[in-house]
Each structure stands twice: as C-alpha cells, then as structure tokens.
Image 1 (cartoon, rainbow, N blue to C red):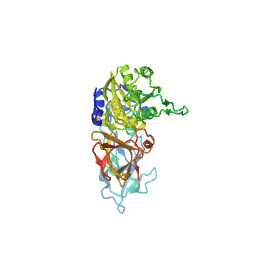
Image 2: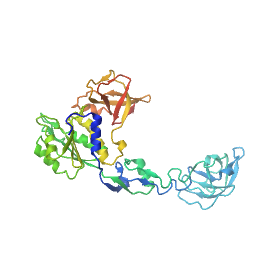
Image 3: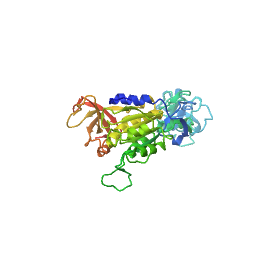
Image 4: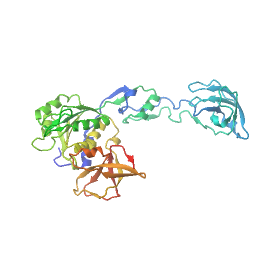
Length: 420
C-alpha cells in the first residue's frame, strides 16, 4: 500500500493497471443491445449494397446512350420494364432502352446510370413506353455500386465499442439478431453514516437524506453498469461488513461513500480489512475528494470515496467510471475521461497555490462563436450539491498554475453544451 498521497494521474493509472480482467461475454437480443460493449469483432458476410441500386426514382439507362442529350435536343428511349424496390430486373438493357426504376431498386444488367424524372419529358406517369432525356449522364450517376459502402470480409465493428443507434443499424444489416457483448458489471453501492436516512423518510434534526447512493448509481447506469443499491446503515463495522458480505459473490465492484477518512467514526478501512480487501493506495492529491481508498478483494475493486456529494461526484468521474469501463470491456483508449480545451471566461484568473495538488472546479461550458468557453459555478465547497445542477463540466486546475481570463485550460465534460 502507498503510504503517501498520490497525484491524480498516478492514482488513475494504478486503478487501471490493477484490473486485468473483464466480465464474461454473453449474447443479448439486438433490440436490447444498446449501451452494452461489443464483445467480438463483426465481419461483413456480404457486400453493402449487395447489388448496384438506384439512388432515386427515375430511369435506368446506359450512360453512353445519353451523350449529347439536352433540353433542345432530347434523346428518346424505349421503356422496356418497371423495377420497384425489392424486385429483380427481368431484362437486360440494350442500346436506346431504359427501365423505369424506384429508389433502392436493383439496376438491370447493362445499365450504369439513372436519370431523375425531372430530367425527362412527359415521363412521370407509370406505364410509359417512351422517355425523352433532357440531359447527358455520367457513368455511375445516381447509382450506389455494389460494395461501395462495405466490402464483404471487412471488419465493420470492433470489440470494445459501445453499442448505439449506428452500431445497431450495422448489426441489423448483417442479420445479427443475437449480439455478443460483455455482461454489464454489477456494482454494489453502500453509503455509511449514522446521520443518513432514506429518501422517503421525513427529515429530522441532525439527519440528512442519502443522496450519494442514488447519484453514484445513476452515474454507474449511464456508464453501462448495473447498480445494486445496498441499505445505508450506521457507522457500525459489523453491520457494514455483513451488508457487503450478503452480496460479495454477486458483484464485480464495490463503491462505498463516507467513513473513508481517519476520524473516530470513519470505519470503512476496518470494514475493508474485515472483508480481506488489500488496500492499494489511500488518499490522493485532489480537491474535492482527497480522502479516497482503493482496495482489491481478489478481482473485485473496492472504492472508498468521500461522503461529501461534490467530492463523491468527482471521485466517481475520475476513478469509479474508468474502472467500470475497463471491466465492461471498453477499449483502452476510452477508459479515462476525455479532456477538452476551453477558454476561461470568468471575471478573475484562477490559481491553485498548492503545487502538488490538482483541483476540479464545477463549471459551465458553452459555445460562443464556435469557441468553447467555461465559467466556474458558484459554491465550490465539497459539501455543496446545488452547483452540480448548474454544471456540465469540471475544470482541471493543476497546482502552481495561474489560469488567466481568455486562456485555455482542460475541462472534463459530463453534460450537454449549449450555444450562447
């Protein structure tokens, strides 16, 4: 165990490097696969498009037959068949012939271009036997060629990708109705503290409602995990230990909030010891969220994070969610939260005098004239929760740095960015 506080970057790398496994690969129905992480590579077993097809309603022709066509000197074609979408052409085009064709329909043999109805004269109605073309066509004009989108045998989806609407479309295109995915990690969440009461209970003097568990659970759910809320309990080592023991064989990760420091009622270190979890490091050089304990019990990571709401939020963004992404099979490049660059638009410069510490400030990022700007939120105390509602990012301010107004600095975006 590290006996000294770790820098944010070193602590994140220790968490990531300690996790060498992922959850199992399972198969889920395609319509339920959104939000999962793809477990196997997907290769195209056909070309896409599967055949040369028309990109609009019009007439399929041979482009060489259209040379010289104009509004003043139209070229006449004999219409030999009509091809709706989903039908197979029955005839091959010869010189001077055309086929009426619909968007998405297969081109007949011999055709290599499609003219739109608007480029013809008196040929909009069905059943026409002659079409007059008013403009010349290029080879492949208005045609989607077989395999121009995806070639048979190519890899179209990579393991570690998060499945969304676009991925579902690709999977459906290749007939994959059961999708190989990593099982969503089960994350147990337990808030400790004799001052905590449940959300449904009436407020009492000296008590606070347990908001941390629900906040962390939602972050876990949005990141692709399966939260398991445990009953919050008092600062009793045995009660907390037993509550975790009841589910320890069902979970992939444990997050506890509160009781993680070194005060008389900070019992989480003893609870972790009772559960035979080995502490990897304790305390990190950040604000908020410096009291932080990371431990492992076999392959199960334990995160002891602050009980202060803002600190709990920051700890979750920086450590819990990257670990969750690792367990759920996401690619290594996407584990740590991406940092954007934003122009500081506060009234005063920002400065952190503690050289080794890194501070994460709740802030609002917005777009103005195409530039990402950021202003700090009011109320930066680790116990304040109201500023989180108005924030959509965290400003990273490293120790010894002076950020002047108008300068750019790194921000971690976690909400929608609007235009002002």
